[in-house]
Length: 211
Image 1 (cartoon, rainbow, N blue to C red):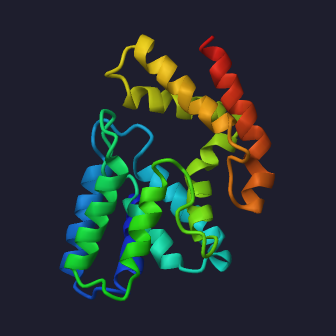
Image 2: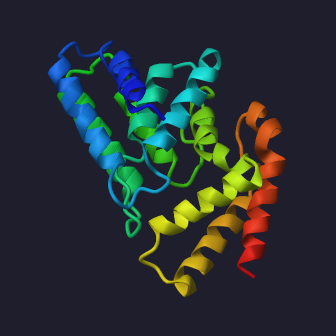
């Protein structure tokens, strides 16, 4: 991942709504600092970059592309393994920074709702496919080949290293089983076809490893 290119992506997006480069740089530094925290093994700038690229690939299908892009940038800005309020705090962080710095032309409420939807990975906004795409981008890792998926699980375990196995494993298995119990893991037809079967296979394989 090229952090300079990622910075260019941020500037290209945000300068549409704020022409003060010093402000945009200030927010950029906040973003970089948050996603570079020591506990970030998976929920980091690489994850953000992957999601941004997926959004660009599907730009023609997304109604409010900029709102989705901003939601991607901010959706994991606050991430603490102990907390159940990461998404709410991330949404608040996004809203505060975007409103404070005159991003008035944006639908900031939509950005906030998109971020909140990642808590339970359920669609909050069903007026269009934007929310569906965002959630699918966030979960695309589940449908990759086993080697990539296994590396992802190891990174997640590192993020929760403060918990011993006897606490982590049952909690992780519950999360995984909840995914399997869903009628569909992915919300868009495209990603259902691409990743649904493989994601279910990977999740079941991970569950079996804990047995």
